[in-house]
Amino acid sequence: MHVCSRLPKTEHKFSVADLQVKGSTAAPIARYDFFLSKPPMAAAVGTSPVLEILVREPDGYSIWNGPPFNNSNQPGIKLEKVPCSGAKFSEDGSRLMVTKTDCSISIYDSSTLKEIRCFQIPHVASALSPRGTYLQTFQKSTTPQEKNVVLWSVETGDPVYQQFQKNMTKATWPSIRFTADEAVACRLATNEIQFFDPADFSKGILHRLRIPGVAAVELSKAPGSHVAAFVPESKGSPASVQIYPCDKELQSQPLARRSFFRCSTVQLNWNRGSTGLLVVVQADVDKTNQSYYGESKLNYLTTDGTFEGLVPLKKEGPIHDVQWSFSGKEFAVVYGFMPANATIFDKKCKPLLELGSGPYNTIRWNPKGKLLCLAGFGNLPGDMAFWDFVDKKQLGTTRAECSVTSEWSADGHYFMTATTAPRLQVDNCIKFFNYNGSLFFKKMFDKLFQADWKPESPEKFSEIAELIKSVDSMKVEETKSQGQGSTSKKPAPANPPAKKPAAYRPPHAKNAAAVQAELFGGSSTGEMSKNALKNKKKREKQKEKKATEAAAAASSAT
Image (cartoon, rainbow, N blue to C red):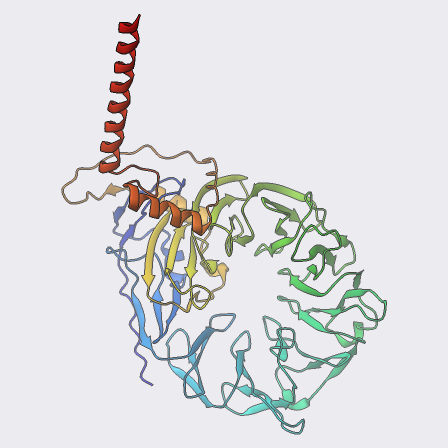
């Protein structure tokens, strides 16, 4: 396959375009062109990587150069569309895995887009290790003697480990788990966790951690020093989550343990630094009959044993979302019956900031840690509120209806939402927002399957405050649109009030309004058409005429 790489030329001309949208309360930013002899923050610009976006449509994937865009406010294309059935970056963004219709898997260097290795393997599922060192494949097997899970070396193309796995579930795939730095590798087996040497799988299983009934495991992220294990309820015994060190010599006893009844599934969320674990416990049945979807609780455990218990939440109801900040020192929770509450806690489980309540079920921490986005996606209208966590103020609110995926860019300056198939078959699109919630780019698609940022370490980018300060210090000349003069607008308040969401109208009510508008000349939006307004005036005149005649008849009778 021929892969062409076209990198944009470096220019000292910057443009920031902001198209204010209906429903957005963020401070409008006019479009500016900056002409500089030297770019600001030369050292940061020179070392910071370029943002990139993977976009996959039915006929293949392409790679865009991320914002800021050129003067036409359109993204540059680094890689033209290439046919595929799937594409995904490794966790560190160094490798790109592309699956094709002929069952082949190609691994590319994501910076040069050169193919490193192509595997001709019939498979059902595939996964890259966090740094792209290994490719793991799963295919259906008819007998236990057939080893259907294979771990391949990307550099050599050789299999380094093989095993049999009866079926594939979310809890058991990928079969072999790695920490973010690939320093530890383990596998969930019956009643035990098996550990390997990631540098040499030919050594086989180095040691085993015996945990009767273990059903799910989660390795800590960075550093990869601990592993969490979930044991479901069995024969009257409560379910439990246990934390063990990955070092064999320290695995005689769990460092922390939390038991609970009424537990069907759990979500295990490690922080960066491997000091804390958030456990969302989900039960299929709510014994209080308050929720059709069961009940959920949020538990918190620390590796040093200083805290083991429930997170103190002020409102009853489900746990919609929970996410750690990039620093690993704070976490945010969206919880409770609608309108849901949102609260930020520190590592000691003490509330730091209340973000209020609203139609929210999603929270996204900015990679730089200063900002976060609170949103309501899925079956909610798509309201978004952007907050400055450090200054404890709201930067702006807007709306992104029908969004399926959402994530911050690695530099923390942009927020992307995407409406994708097969979840939604209509109105597929990509939207880019500034950190304050103002929309500056939108592109519609007939059908869009995927839109992902290329992963980059946030530490490679300068702080957002420095970027904003450098832009504000520039000499700004506002670009005049054709046929119009320069107009000055008062900036919106820094902390605008959140817009009250509109009342829900069922589809049949909307259709009825549209039919009524078509039959009687009205408008489904509540505005009257010209004919309807004319008819209304006629009726009013007729009423006045009748009233006048009646009054005259009454006076003549007397």
